[in-house]
Image (cartoon, rainbow, N blue to C red):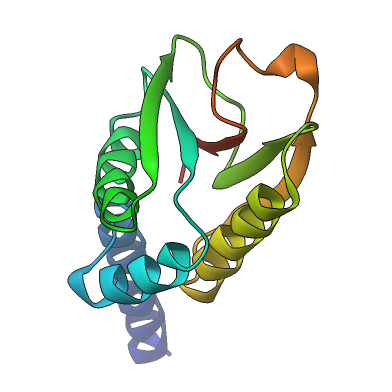
Length: 147
C-alpha cells in the first residue's frame, strides 16, 4: 500500500513539473512554422494588421514580436499597440473592421486557420464595431491575451 501511495505522489509531482515548464515557456513562431506562415499569408497580402498586447503581459509581448517578424516576411505591415489594462482575452482574438474588404476578411480567416492549425488558441475572426477601431488603424486587429 505504501508503495502505491509513493508512486501516486511521484506522478503528481511530475505532472506539476511538466505544467510549470509549459507555463514558463512563451508562445513563439518557430523556424519550422515561419516558412508555412509566410507562404500562407503571402498569398493573401499585403495587408496592415494591428497587434494589441497588455503592458502587464511580457509573454504576450514577446509572442507579438515573434509574430510581427513573420508577418513582415509575408509583406504584411504589422503595427503594435500596448494597452494599460488587461485585454481580458485568454489566447488570441482576430477582429476585422465592419468596412473591411472581402480580401481583408479572407486574409483574417487565413490567419486564424493557420494559428489554429499550429494549436494556438484563437477566436474569430469577428466584426469590430466602428467605435472599437481607432481612426486610421488597420482593418485587421489581433489581440494577444494571456496564455
